[in-house]
Image (cartoon, rainbow, N blue to C red):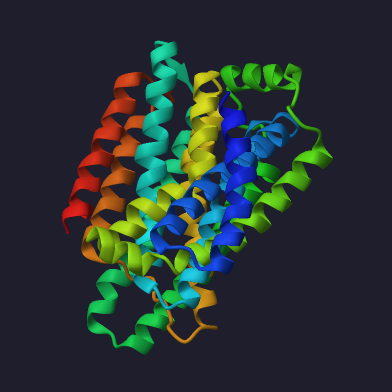
Length: 355
């Protein structure tokens, strides 16, 4: 049923997005059409990556989901950078971090926990990811904030570029560690059983079809994202929203819709290794790859983007990481832990709305 709704949204939304932008329809109508079309396209990306995940196994599957979920975020951010909307880009990165750790993980734990009293995932992966989260958010994001207080713009940008290169290098090393040198070393009985069960499951689409759908969806999202960015200023004025709120809540939710849906579906199917890998893996990819890449790409544009967040952005990200680390470090989840993460997200959402 939901697949039919998303199919309808895609086949109506994408042509309307093209026609509307050519014929200059009212901005508010276009904003709604663009957002719904991106969410519908994201569902196709989610289903395609789920099919590939069944073939590739839970770790690579989770990585694929995170990557293509973040492709939308990266595309929207690049066009926002081009338009000089640095505040929106930093806010959407913040929104992605707190959205993945609190909203996606929270909904996954909650929905899965309603069906299963106790859900298990790989405790070694959880602890490995905890260390990386602490490094990526608390070390790499707080350092520029503190040091930049006594620096001019040029030095702050140089510091940001240096940290960005280190983050990308460590992220690639983390992938090499997980997928090559230590692949299967920290496998638990539960994750082995889940991996075996995954091999018996039939993918919805074949490998070729999945890759084709991924590519077409990504191209369509790129086109619509460019147009979506130009509606932000008008929408902000119409609703009385700040750039910060649009970035943290709206762009982050629209941009990450694919993995939101995928993680919740996986949790409902009791595939918690993939659900957690999507939520946490996606956060790590945003912090250690997408954010640094955007800092480096901004050097090509007129307005450069240092890796310096506002205090509310920084504190919400740090507290999200600490809460997620405490909740996930035991390698199991239930609906109440999910509800706790969701409560934290709504508290932050109210704060950003009222700022």
